Image: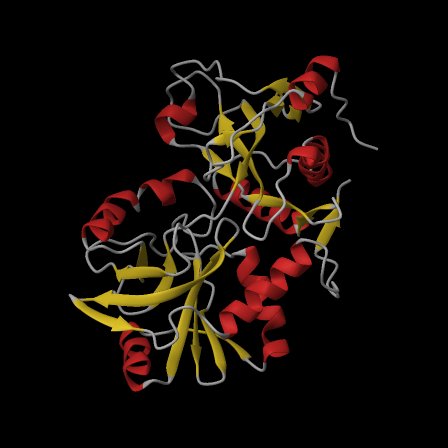
Length: 353
């Protein structure tokens, strides 16, 4: 049974929630949020609050030492009005893996799952219907102890906020630039944790990517600038012959939940899933020869987005199937599971209403 009991004020906020037709991504915020506090070695019970600014001490460690983590999830509604969330247990486990890496307390898995299920159920009437529409969920934890010593905080706050969203990218496919000067993460670092520093470190490169009229940055390994790793917020796949190739996981690559799902369903589409080190020159040669006809990015926000071209050292390598073939089939299948419309042999979709 859920620990969360929304009071009348919270229910009124949800029932009276209004919004325009242009949802965008990350700007149509739900009117409520959930909070838990950690102090003296234990978590408080979660509670609903009206959505609004946080009151935080200027000396809070999160503001100085970036001790914070987050997750990204979605709730989907089908034409029958059923609302599902996708693989929430995997998000709970990854959230706590990030917490351990950032010297933060783990959130009890049952509390994490309770918050995302309760929030999705409470907002069910507002979850938009449509292939590219959903309720995006953002659980996050911040260090709140107001001291400036460089050590792990003793106090933390966990929050869950959400927003109604449409397509992440404005176009159906994206242009990608390979970053050669900077690195996203180094061995032994925090690359596998879902923490803001990894994303903040990518923003300067993203500006350069935009200057080159591209949409996303593809990162190479920090030591050799030789092996493909991931995009700034998504994992990378290439269809090479009959293989579905993605870089093998290391401590510099985020273990994407959508990535894992794609690998598990690949054989359904006559593709052999392959996780290995992928040299950027090998990839580009396979594009030039026509052996690699399509590539795509994947993640919770974008689900699966075909890659139109790769720019490397001022040369553009165009994929011969820029809008995706296998990738479109995989995306449609996974979206069908996420919306409760396809058979779900892995029990990934969790109904919340």
